[in-house]
Image 1 (cartoon, rainbow, N blue to C red):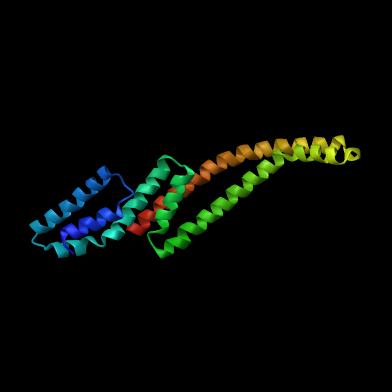
Image 2: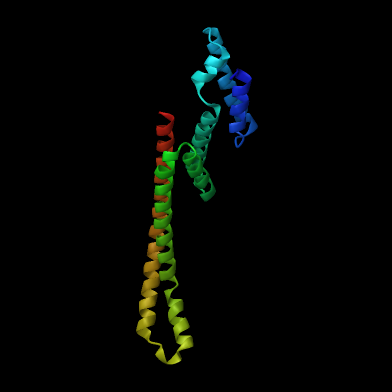
Length: 182
């Protein structure tokens, strides 16, 4: 593989990045070829020493997506970072997707529980409307107490969500660095 083919393949692998970022990376790898030629190596030897441009592109994109998720932890950024991490290798399918599914399950169940506790007084009111003779103040008191517990659980889930997302993004960063050999 010659220099132009290598740089073209690398540029294709980095399509999600902006043109400015791709050009900066292209200049860095162009410099590798200049330094290699100064050492007396051929373009094919330099390209072989650098490795597969597709793999390099995947690694760069994974680092980019994880850093983007770390700076702004939105759902879309985290999903793109997970997908980029999985793309680094088959083993990452297990090492990234498994913890991600567990994290989503824990957070979803906590938020669903908090929401259902908060909405419990509505069930008492619906029951009183459908069956007027069965209303009891005790049921209303317990459902209001449950709603209060749901609000506390919601506050706890908010902070737990932020903490778990932060930890998962750090895990993704560690995983990407491990796969890259860092």
